[in-house]
Length: 221
Image 1 (tube, rainbow, N blue to C red):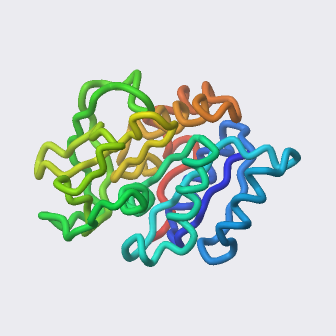
Image 2 (image 1 turned 180 degrees about the horizontal axis):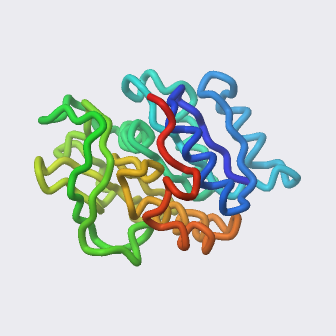
């Protein structure tokens, strides 16, 4: 089962659709519908079979993201694969002491070229690709914990677009892999499912670049 912590964002349901298209079992809980103890209980429940956690996009900053940072800490302690998207990535960085600051460029509903290291969840992709961005905040690179490596960056304004924990199965992206504006998004999600051992990742690999025709286009926002 994949747990999605929903930070009250319409894009959450695109993530749900994409993961369920791979036949993954997905449970969605709002960020104020569960606390740290609840996440720990899910992680310890063999019947729940929690294999991965996704921290969704959402408004505000990590302090507004409810249980998100606690869920990240539980994932780290239990070594549960975790993917943070947009606010989710910012919450990952904040949980390890990074500052979240105003981005040099406010970007909402635009695609930017992203270059990356081709490893982890970004493996098997072209050296750069276009990706959807909806954010006004970003990680302060000078405060990023040494426990994270920068994995992706925007070409136009040099903002951190991806981070990966150096030892744990935890990655985050600032862009939206669930958006139709991110053609490589399905492949990134497939890589996460492979990491988590949930669903049939090849079904998302086959959908690369075709969210719209697969019925996975952006929800209203």
